Length: 101
Image: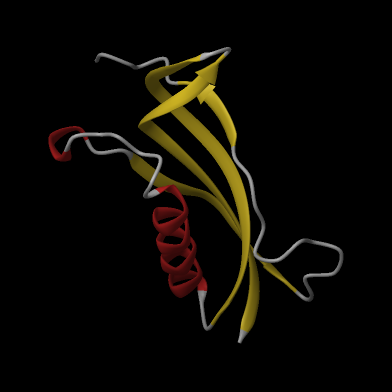
């Protein structure tokens, strides 16, 4: 199996974020990087997207008619995972500028 670094962007994620004592629910986007082993790029992409769906399942509050979207920004084949934390963790969240559109 080959090793891949997969960078993903997500948009239109309706999530609650703590703001002091209150929780504010609004739409956010994110960037994240995950590392996987797969036979090829297509399998690496599918594995990472499924991994992220499972990670985010309890946080996402979107209605079915307004689903969030994830897409792969970049896939890089690696010789080794080296110092990278595998499979990776965390999200860089940002307010979704297209909220309400």
